[in-house]
Image (cartoon, rainbow, N blue to C red; front, side):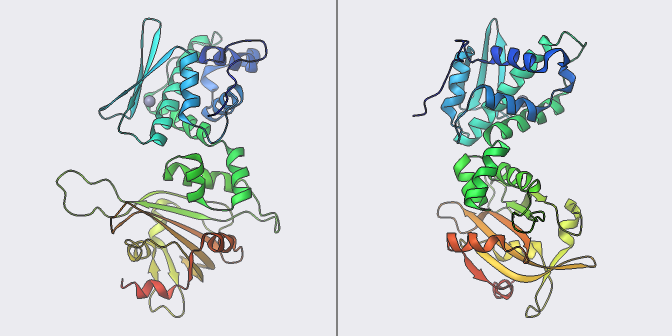
Length: 340
Ligand SMILES: [Zn+2]
């Protein structure tokens, strides 16, 4: 059990109303609702409630309890993952009982942000602000939830100790694969290699199989869920550009595209390091290593998710990880053997 400090030294209850006043005080007379940034609110939120990491659901329940917010879990929340509403003096957050624990954690933080956002708008006496557009406030709430679950400095410390192990990172923080991949790359983007003082260059690509619809017999194809590229590559990479990347090795008869690599590994359970081959992107070519990691649903032959990491071979970040985690270390021709 995690011991939580629920009151500050002066005995003030740590709840959402007091947090909003704390934010207001922090900004002094410069507070403006229209300038609030979800990441900044998340940092102050983490500091104010002195969270322990990895964050668990109980820590969030404690805040809701102290804030007079009721949490209800129902079996069907319809199209949304959760919602909140006010009746009289009471606020209620409704969660989807079918969601995994990490999904519930994300949803409750999403709803807490919306409650904070609403309260801060009312507290802003300086400007005549209106409510945020739905799309913006939803994106802000998701950003807040991700930043509170995985604060940059806690993620940085974890990576410094454990290396570029995204699956391990996900397990530790108990967040979704996509959120972890995005957060991992965000943190790495701002780091430099301690030895070379160069940026840490990693491309991350996460492929997922969409969920089966009832009555559908065919297994859905693995599709790109999210991707990120950090600094240090001699090219930019838009989503359209991903299909233009090819991989090449003198012993492989043809250039391989990323979707051919995904297909080759679409029913494997083995994590691999494929090392020292050429990445070509238009007229640019560079020597790279690639990590391929898979997620398999229990007893099902097809891979549910594939994470591909690409990094220049000049920075062998992945070799330590492969050794520590016992990955297969292979050359690119293994992909030809997989019968494309
Ligand atoms: Zn929402």
